[in-house]
Length: 444
Image (cartoon, rainbow, N blue to C red):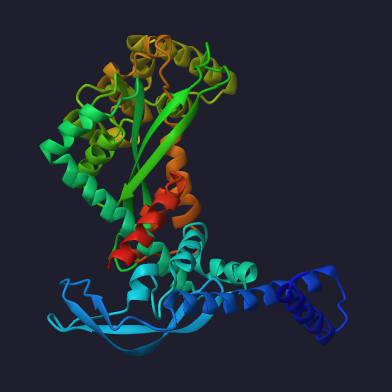
């Protein structure tokens, strides 16, 4: 046993003698965790001191103009880290030419005086995109012994959302640059089959007048494996994989630019088979036709069936008759017999009612307008997915599970960036955003 190990053991024995006799293992674990946190803070301060060195150079190159920067003095700083709030000292230099000051240690290690460290920000943001900020603040302290306000969690989550937006803006700039796209086409090997999907979900916003609900538009790119069932009532075995999500509060035209830029990142323009699945909303098909006219357009099977269910509910009061009609019409739709489907709905149209209040008229219009997107026998024969469960899952995970938590009323800015951050998390991109955060701070 070396000298340092013996000293650590003696310190541990003295600490244990100072504690009262524990009443449970849980109490022992909590005390040890707090002690490890304190010891980690001591080690981090020592490590920073070691990295700074005892004798700073008299001169350094200025990071702003590459001129000659002279050492002035040691300055104190404060860091908020996963090991607590720590004080440290480091050398401060000023440039003779541009007169800017800088801290070489801060720049080299990406230190953020008086702010959250990159690691603390990463974990705080991760909690912030998972649960309500107030609840997340209590959970974070319980797990880490580090106290952060709900505002800090909100700020961290928004920071990651802003980072996502910056990446999206870079993609949009690249999408508009012909040389970049030619280079990408030469170097990237596209996938054989890729799916795209779009949807919208309402979020409650503060200070938005008489209509406080605003649509968050959501997109997804993904691949899929498995086959559709042989009958409408069979078991679905299709599973989406390699999913990436994106989201924003904006008009459809603006969202189209994001659709195009994110699509190029997934080689959607070069994919052998590009397939879009949607619920029939006009804005979705307009964007698909504008940016990806070569794509196969499929109306989600389950949304189409919902129109038939509404007709059956209004047309038949007897359960057996209702079910018999619904089974026959769904089978016709499954076989791609659109004329039979439309003819089956027409007898129940009520001309005296407004079209928007008449389920049968809505169904006739819906199936007539989307006829070319409902060739389900061909889609199944080709092994295409015909359900939009992936994008519906995105709306549920981004909006229903996070944005619509009990009592949540959002500021537009917070809602927008938290939605973007959560989309990145659900796309398994959190570590990539975190890497950009560290890189940007080092380069600042």
